[in-house]
Length: 216
Image (cartoon, rainbow, N blue to C red; front, side):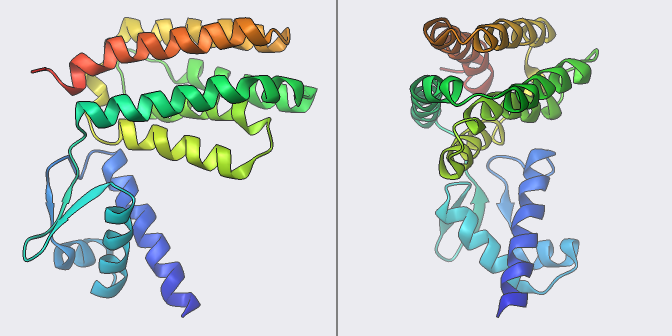
């Protein structure tokens, strides 16, 4: 039973990777027989993994038609951003009060990792690193459920559109916003940190939504 459970988890993670790499795209119908061949496993763990992904909102399931990758609606995106902002603004105070030099250095590393990844084009890796910077701040609260929930919300947003369409100068703006936020956290300025988080989310929506929903 444990072996089957582990295999299902591995297939689940592999499908998420395919979505991250945009090898599986929003709206695409998934044929579990083909996926089983592609991943080199039997149909059962694939079917189990697809069922979990559907329960989590990554896939849609229609009886007699099967699974397809869920298309993010504007309302869903707004809801996800609202929750993300509430979590980050609400817990940044406890994060700063619980901060140690070691935890601050971990956040700094995430900031530097993002900066080092910037090149002449935008790729999905930057969105993962952006998530880790912000999640790293919340990690200072030492609440595993909070950290996991935050990462899941971020993943639900950027898995479902072509992040490569984001302007490169926005990436530079994100880098600068990270630096400002990190400095406010380093100085233990809770109110300034909250203001910067709100501004960051406002700028994110303003730049991402026209890409995700070009016809709205």
